[in-house]
Image (cartoon, rainbow, N blue to C red; front, side, top):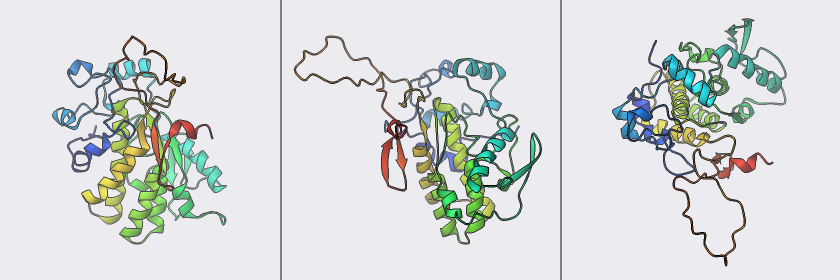
Length: 309
């Protein structure tokens, strides 16, 4: 099987400090899994994932399909971690686009349950909608794992790479195809590609999965850039995209809307004149409510409060 995640490659290694950021805590994301604790210091569930740590053991981070069977089974039992095959992701994304466009078979058409043909013609839009609106329309993948609904670099069930990019089926993949078909210059392409990345979100508990998801989005940018412009993106072009990814693909306990494995948040009122409690506060991270970025308004917002609207 081809190596799907290469920490030591140019685009990943040079943006790894950004891809590991937790924008809520202003530290790094944590492992949030005991899968790696046997590796020693720095690998417990509450430890932050560090750049040096990963560069010393670059083969630690690998997709579920590349993990041994025992590890896959253990993570399924403990965290309900499963993979969604690409054909199922495709059909589910199609249902969303069928509703948005008001017609079927916009990006592809299935010829049996597991296989599809990609639409070759330029995508057309309903009279009342524009391609810019499609690129800006927000999408969220909950408990995203390796983000197979957002980007489909490879089939999560087989590990097979999906090429060329036009054949990919993720929600962001579709936006990037639209950008490709409707822009002529690199400047315009970068502007609308950036907006496409700003419009997709996902959260995940386990730090290794989250990092893989972020890498998959970054490598998707690289793939589409190289396919369109026949050259590699520069670090100056990569870093803003990596920063957007670090904001939009974030680490969260989906039951609490907080960073994982922190002490519980208290919501009771504080009596300023009461005697302080004799016991010490529990050690460790505070379970902060997770922050995300609204790129169109330029504001940082709490995800928890968005759910109440």
